[in-house]
Image 1: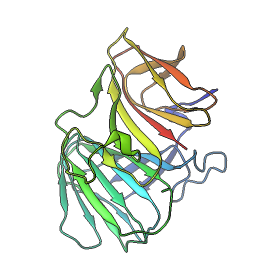
Image 2 (image 1 turned 30 degrees about the horizontal axis):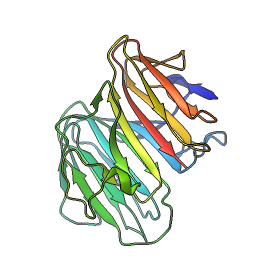
Image 3 (image 1 turned 180 degrees about the vertical axis):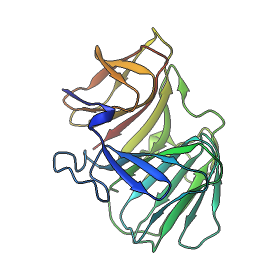
Image 4 (image 1 turned 90 degrees about the vertical axis):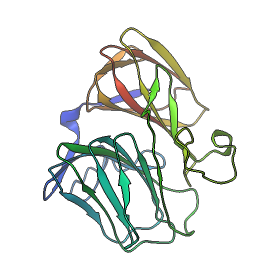
Length: 242
């Protein structure tokens, strides 16, 4: 079954200079029908005015994956030296047993990112903040694994930060990205009982023949295979979660 949510059905949260579209309850946006989806706790797309910042207080037991859609950012966690992020880069904050604060601020005009918050398989652990610099943001007509909690997706024992490696998650989930040309169809297969959530970052796509446009989301369950057809050169994220 596929449940579509158009961009106008999403929640909105504002901070000074930042406008955030929320697929699930977040900050002052409360929607009891959309609190989480499996291990997905939040999906937020944020648009920044020049040099505005998005700040978090204390957090624990969260994997927060930030993918830069446009512009440049800095990410600072717990007073450590900030990471510099460019378009296509992926920042992972695994809060583990707890962090005191984190912030992301735009270093250029017209900047935006998407954040995916995931609940880890187990609580605790040492907090981590890592960046993968990806010269190619998404797969071309095939899903590229951007972040994963499965060992088979990243056979190395340690995270080397290479551009083609998935960011290592503490959740049993995958975050995948793709740019799909108009008229091209691809398929994704998952296991029974898994939950999928798709976000359209731009363009229009059909999911099992159901059209969905830029800014929208789709919650997918009881479907072990989905068919994705490009309508107007869409860019998407697809999350596979327990």
